[in-house]
Image (cartoon, rainbow, N blue to C red; front, side, top):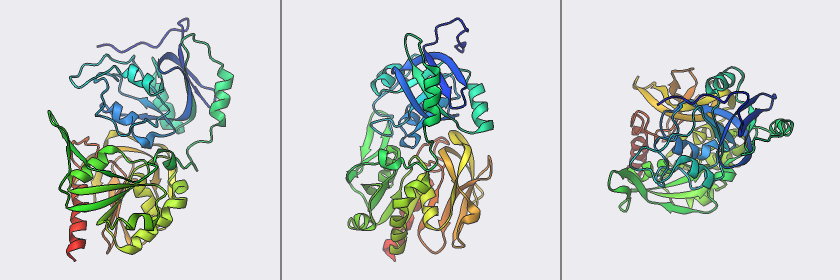
Length: 390
């Protein structure tokens, strides 16, 4: 298999990526036609592109895939994290690879068109990734026009006019609108997804943009899961009489979502109910404790991030997707840092001393290690069991 070569200057460019500073990347349009504006980020994962594109945490973002062979496993109806993808578009080095996997039910390009996702192939993704790494994630517009005609000035203006993710609450856009129960558990070859019909505990998950596989892991750990909207109040949560509360992942600026979520989390902390947060849930738990978050230059997005558990000394290979981070120096004295990134030393987890409350920045359900971090779901259930026994 060979890498695609970017089109020559005299080739017909049916796709472009235009950044807010006027930089233009030209190539071949893929997926749906039209244009889409968002923050341009990069993901270094070698597998899982369908899960990445359907992760609600990517709302408002155009994803640059650094791995060149995107499309080789095709697309199917099982490997999705939400019904409607929230990502704004995608950038590839090579043309979409034809599917070569027994689980594939359709070509990735056809799948992209069905969801209205605009993409661009034939781009020097190394150059684009270096630009993001050195200068930060820019605003940009990805556009696809079969006739190759683009109004570059208008696209630059659109990129400049987009407000960016800082200060933006996107959880409301991807959260469920009404409460529902989740019983789907782990997947097996030949058996598909199991059903949790004999749960031991009841967990309420606050949906800030929850990935389906997180809910599956909770169910597989023995929990009945009730999912409530991001705007749920303490009363909305506690009327279900939960044994534990889960704070989900999600997109956007945690401080913006925290305007309505933090008061709820503070109230839940007062009840003493066991609590577990992932990604955005980790950040908002930290905000509820009085800490602060800040935007990262390029963020953490990939499936190869080493994280150290400070209690055990164990190193986990983790999947990550976040552009904001908790500032550990702002945490209160009763919050203990439990995990740190071995890439840059940033905070990856905390626990609350004297209370059954903890959270992590990374995604333990995504299985890059492949199951290095699944113990966190067992830890949550153990805290629930101890609370009930007491």
